[in-house]
View 1 (cartoon, rainbow, N blue to C red):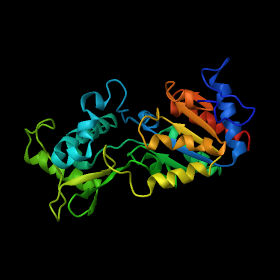
View 2 (view 1 turned 90 degrees about the horizontal axis):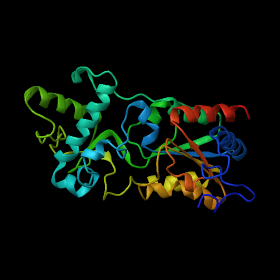
View 3 (view 1 turned 60 degrees about the vertical axis):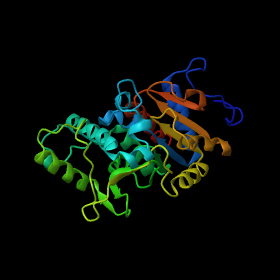
View 4 (view 1 turned 90 degrees about the vertical axis):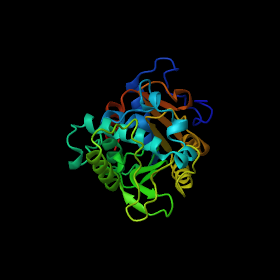
Amino acid sequence: MGGLFSKEGSAPVTPAGAGYSLDAAIEAAADAIASSGSLTAFTGAGISVESGIPDFRSPGGLWSKYKPGIYCEYNTFLREPHLFWQMGRELALEVHNANGGGDLRQGLKEAEPNAAHRALKELEEMGFLSTVITQNIDSLHQRAGSSRVIEIHGTMATASCLETGQQVPQSEVLRQWVAFREANPEAHIATDNWVPRHPQTQGVLKPDVTMFGEALPTGALGASWKAVLSSGVCLVVGTGLNVVPASLVPGLVKWRWGTLIIANLDTSGASSANIFLQGPAGTVLPKLVAAVQARC
């Protein structure tokens, strides 16, 4: 599939090709970006791993312990919301401890944007990148300074009452969790069945993320299609493009005879790419930015 929609006369630059090298692929990607004048990025969990956020799907990841079809499934959440909050709190503690830990009463230690997030911001400042579409729920693109981010799977920054839809910030969920821990010092995440509730309505709070079996946020998919179809290049970073329908979005760039660049630590997605960049996102993307800058 890699060359099926390639521009006439061009061959895919991927590990399957003869004489492939990362440096040559970066140069080819920089040529494509500099000549296109329009770029959309599509990111997944792999871009945030270097910020200390685990990739759920990797061996030993959170989904090795917590099956997503149960702990992240919408109808299961309606029946047993404590299951998601059990998994969510374990992940929050893992990230908190990876970033220095400390007393939760002083707030959660959050992951920080890494070099890959900042590289995308640089591409925006250079006038190439117009939109970041992300499957991630960590808000790291916004914190890195990207101005137009489509969170196609929602966000953990807020939660909403299941009964009324009234929204609260993440800090309210943390406040309730800290109070519960102080009132129940012997409680354990695996068995305490804790669930946060809206402070006024007492309805169960659901994080504003898209669970399995739940529709994507209103307008997110359409806005993503529009962004990709208006771009000459789509740069995919840190995702094997396994979760539909979001995973179908990057390939739309080929409908307009554009270029699909995929950057991953392993070879996931290489067969679909016009240009494939293999390596850590925090290393590869700054090199790509430097190569694009050299062409300006």
